[in-house]
Length: 348
Image (cartoon, rainbow, N blue to C red; front, top):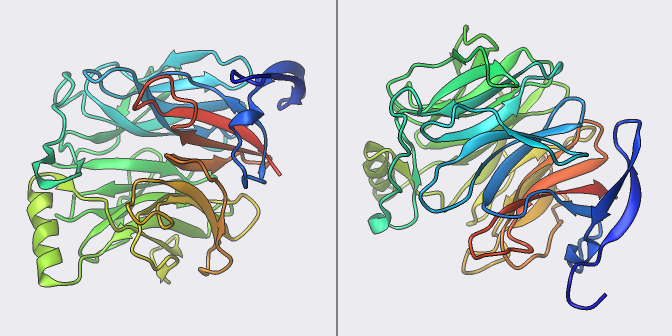
């Protein structure tokens, strides 16, 4: 169909009702053999960290469009594409997730209580860094944004929260100990417990579907120079995410095991719903470290498989609860430089 979109009108059954959808399978790259019926859900701005609801019908994600704006949280109906702002619209937000298994509530991190204004961009004079805004706390609310409840009040960064699939626990990253460690708490914010204590960054954690394991990304400085640089940046509420490895542990923090072992940035891990296998994003194939693709690996570190082959960014993958669909963020089909959009596909 020429150089434009190849639009394939098909029938899709996601929720027991049949509707027509538009797909752009020409955006599937050579080698992406697990993808079928790729559908682009957003078309402008920076959209990321899209995660499925328990019923598989909705996505919750963060988005902004324009350099002067900050991320806010949105919920999208996958079938219709209807999208609603569900955060306050103040400050900056990140890392949202549905409260499983009923989808009655959501959690996300926000700075709106400490400062309703959009914070300044990170200082890149020390290289590429993530900013750990100390005003970030974790909040719980109904899906329309009402009944907002503050779950953390640490004098520092609290974010990167996800629910266990039984809805009993939240895992998140916090500076409560003075270092970036993983903590858990009950859905109402009670019962906070620290799970990691090694010097370095622990974050981006996900539970597996049967509630027995946690996967997360970590950077542990080893030499004096690495430790000094890490602590220098941390004092400035920053971290350089250049070398991140995947780890797993039991839900009580025992039996910590390293999954990846390379010099790359491996991040955004989540489990396959019915396998002891992890899908994640990595730049391990790119010597310059700029190209990120999706990979899958067994939890024991074996059987690694490259999933995507797009020349750019693919990240933040998550399977639908039934394992039939995959959602991820990608730079493919940009309207303008810097765009990152949300895609969903059937998993083969």
